[in-house]
Length: 232
Image (tube, rainbow, N blue to C red):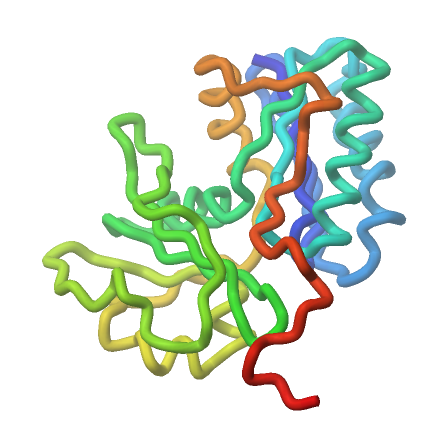
């Protein structure tokens, strides 16, 4: 399949194109530069492949959870391209993309992904591999405070790694859970090339949507609401 994957849900701006069985990619970690970088990166991979938007089967969107502004950037760009070319969008979890890269680099059974949710919280996802090797959510993605993660307290005979920027952003979260982790993968932000297999599987299983039906995965609906323990 010919697919273009985008992700701007984190500090990374990431684009990957799967075209005629070849991979073309751009990935840059430059905070607050996504608006400037994204469209030129898309043009670059299309030019590298000598392809046009109309040659695609669908657009794969890293749909968060993550930065609210970042998610909206990729969503709006993907919707604009999809409307113009008559394509559908396959939304996939950005955190599952982090897990996919961690699985590719480490022989582990489970990956625990955290991303910065601000307000002293992280977005949490726990993933295992399905029969095809792709990550699937062992529990629903959610917000998590800097405290013990209940699902990790059950002993496991299989290796379990941490991945994602949340562990680095909040060292306390790692310290209170490290006894139940076997290591930390060197993967911080979603890389669009690892969204491509997730998007292809999503397309084949009927998860492609018209662009007007795509809604970013906002796990926290009220961004201005202060945590209960915040000082006035």
